[in-house]
Each structure stands twice: as structure tokens, then as C-alpha cells.
Image 1 (tube, rainbow, N blue to C red):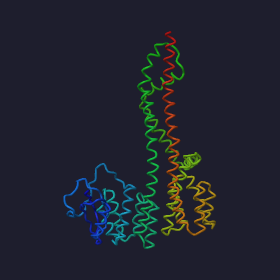
Image 2: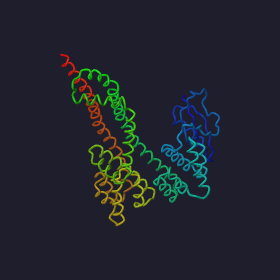
Image 3: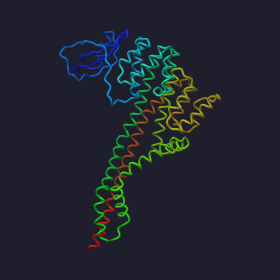
Image 4: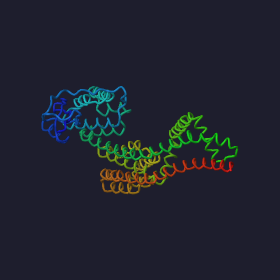
Length: 416
């Protein structure tokens, strides 16, 4: 049978680790629970199968060694793991400070351990968990802190943290879907750039001497390609500088609120790209808003928080007008529909949910719908993008080859 390493916590908060033989991870979890332990980590061991079935000598968990090349920041994946594990420990009945101690012992990196130690010290000093997190805004977002604050106020911190972890995981899956879809186009662009650079850097300059000896005026396309090849050979080092300059100027321009809003508006007006961005932002917006409302945050307060999570400035600014009309008693669904920047299906479902008193549930349904819609739009987007990129590469390479052939044909006519 496969061998699995585990880390678990007893009802007294004591941390233990060991190895078990089992058919799968689920069996390990069940056996640990039968022993009164709360499993925190179960991973396949690389040491091979054990000769005997049973629990090996359990020892206090030791913090994993940290590589000198490890990140000095707490990643979103690590934050998700912390949230999930803290919810599990609190649900098992451990007090908050004991749960924090356990998480510190389970910390996978030094930055995570330092973060948890700081939070634990603040909690022991008399601060609430939300106050301790609020001091560390570089790690914990306003959304995260308000969810925790709502859980503390309602006396259901473990349940709130579980829902928060679920929301973070769904947002991570949505982001992963988009990132995975961009892998192939990125590779294709890199191949195209490298192919063109090889042609201009190595192939085209070899024809320069032959064309010069012919003593005949070359076609404009051949002259342009040879000049590009010479530039690549003599001044290739300027290309990274130009790329960096373009990136720096674009980054500075997008930091300007007016320019950023114009750019985001232009993106929304594009057929497939705009539809993709609109659906991604809608899924994130509705899921985040639904989570906040489900945990006791008022609609006005939730909208002010959600606005910070919307990446497209046109869609984010539209929420300001919705908030203003909500304060005037005009409701939420109708002003959102009037913005015309959110999908009609989403706004109509939200309006129905508001009128029926099931806004939280309807927001969750909208988020699920648009999570699936994002995958559909990505497939359509890639179905159009891939042939366009391949055709573009073929046109550029074909132009270079044709320009050289025109020069060669001119030399042949001169010889004849």
C-alpha cells in the first residue's frame, strides 16, 4: 500500500505527525478522525511502502526548512491555506490563540510564520482577529478583513472563514482558467518573435554582399528587409531598451485614472475581448458581494468594498452611481441595469433576487453561471486568436522570404 505522511491536531491542540499505510488519502483522514485527531495535511510519502500497517512514531511537527531563494512575501495560495486551516481548527473547538500556535508550527515558510506570530501576539495583547489583520493591509485585503469582522460580530468565525476560503478558492480557479488559456498564445507569440529575429539576424545579412555586388537597384521591400537585418545585427541591444521603454510608458499611462478609464472602455467595446473581461469581472463582483452579504455586511458597505475588487475602471466607476442611487432609496437592481456595463442576464437575475428577498442566493447563482460562461468565451476567443496569430506569422515570414526572392530574381535578370 502507498505510504502517506500526515500532520494532525488533537482536541487539546497538540500537534502530531507520522506516517500511515492506506489505499488512499480519504482512508488516512477517516483513520485519524477515528483516533480523535483533526487531519491538517495528508501527502503521499516518497519513501515507498511500509512493511507494517499502522502509525509510525508520531513526533512534534517541525517547521520545514526554508530555501534561501524562497519568496519573502505571503502568497495568495498560502493565505488560502492559512484561512482553510484556521477554519478547521476553530471548528474543532480550539481557542483562537491555540489555533494560531498550531498554524505557526505548520507554517511552510518563514514569512508565513512571522505573519502568524504577529497576529497571535496582537490577539494575545487584547485585539480582535480583525483588528490584528487590519494592521497588515499589505497581506489582508479590505474584503478579507470585513468578512472576518462580520464573523466575529455574529459569533460564527469558523463558518465565516470556511465560506471565505471557498470564495477565495473559486476566485483562484477563475484566475487559473484565464491564465491557462493564455499559455498557448504566449508560446505562439514567442515562437513568432524568435523566428523573425533568426531570419533577420542570420539569414538576411548573408544576401547583403551579393546584392551589393550586383550593382542594381533593389525593390523597396528587399531594401527594407536588408536594412532591418543590418539593424538587428548591429543594434540588437536596443531592442530590450525599446521594449522596456514601451512597457514603462504604457504602465505610467495606465496609472493615470483618465487614461486607464479610456483604455478599459476601449477593451469593453472589443467584440470577444470585451465580452471576456465583462464576464470575468461580473463573476468576481457577484461572488464577492454575495459572500459579504451572507456574512452580515450591509449592501452599502459591501458595494464600497466590492468596488475595490473590480479591475475594469469603467465597471468599477459604474458602481459609484449605483451606490449613490441606493442611498437615495432607488434600490440596487434597477440602477445596476441602467449602467449598461454589466451583462443584462446578470442584472435581471439580481433584480429578481432583490425583489424576491433572495439577493444573496441569486448573486451566488449569477457567479456560478458566469464562471461557466468565462470558460465558453475563452474557448471562442482562442478559436479566433490562434488562426489570426498563425496567419500573422505566416504573413511576416512570407514577406521576408518574398523580398529576398525578388532581390535574387533581379540579380538573375542582370546576369542574363
